[in-house]
Image 1 (cartoon, rainbow, N blue to C red):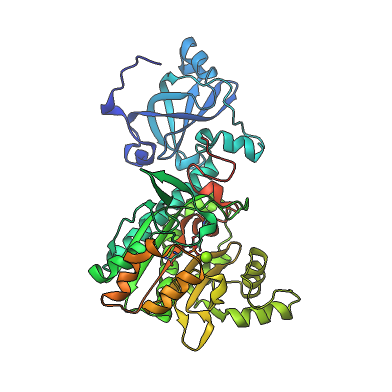
Image 2 (tube, rainbow, N blue to C red):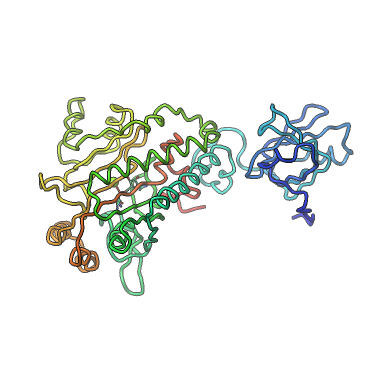
Length: 437
Ligand code: 4AD
Ligand code: MG
């Protein structure tokens, strides 16, 4: 490495250069591209806050400096000093007339070149792939969505409850658990924080958790990760109708804010805003039973009672072209904690929210608040009753109508950015065949 001393007084982030036009500053970053036209060299430097075009003129440079500029390779880290000028044709709108140049860290044979690479290669090099423009754009939108989620709930008086990741209770289903030994006891990585936010409702009324959740999904699809982030609000004295209203308002708020603040990113990603603008209109609603009828009329052979699969969801969202609630699914395909429909014991008071291109991004429900019915469901599903004694207490001591939902962060960001595979929307994806980097 270099022993160069950085004179922080003059160092400026590229994102702030508009305040330094006409001044001599130093920029630190990584080489994103190099072009030479005979006597003029262009160095594109990226520092995480923006991109700057550095211009090196042969006639103004010493031989050493000209040779140094010619030796610059992709992703070497550099220090550039010079005068900042406005230049509408340059990426970012500014350029620098470089008078001093240093390589801080060299980079030879950078594996990711400006050409097509296979996705396995890119995933093997995820630690480097993060630097490329589409990945930066997608992850910046993820960051904006995360902040928006916290702002949304903070502004509405929800209390954030951090739910445990190591747990003894099966949150969703026995089929996709990561098990681990816990000092002689059986433990699981949490599939959901829901049961814990339910417990926090009588303490705070409106709560949410937001953290990583784990599912040992053996499916290798574009919509599944084994570790993904979920945001799960829970509200006391809210029924299934209130729950859907909250989901609609929440999703609309997120999309609007990304459109307001991440225009540059959506443009880099080539996102067509047509169906995103549809979130401003009321969402569609259809019962599961009507959805099955509709699908069958369209030639789909789905039977009442089976869960909607990805192709079914896709057919439905294509039909409506906007976000769509499907509500009241059969009890047999949904989790044990959902409230039985008082008008039809075969269904539960739940909903999924489906969006074009991705299908389900939210699963939500009113919770079973009747002790005996809940116990019946735990037994029906052969779940270990002992590990739910604390959860059943919530029905023993002041049971209450309550509802909540879980929004999958990566699928939501995938839908908003138009990136098809959710593995690109988490910095270091975990999938069935991928634990590294
Ligand atoms: O429908 P799910 O399983 O619901 C729950 O976990 C409830 N406990 C939520 C609640 O009511 N509090 O998952 C919720 C969402 C899905 O709609 C999907 O967006 C996402 O989590 N999700 C996944 N995302 C990526 N990879 C996976 N393997 C996912 N499984 C679920
Ligand atoms: Mg679901």
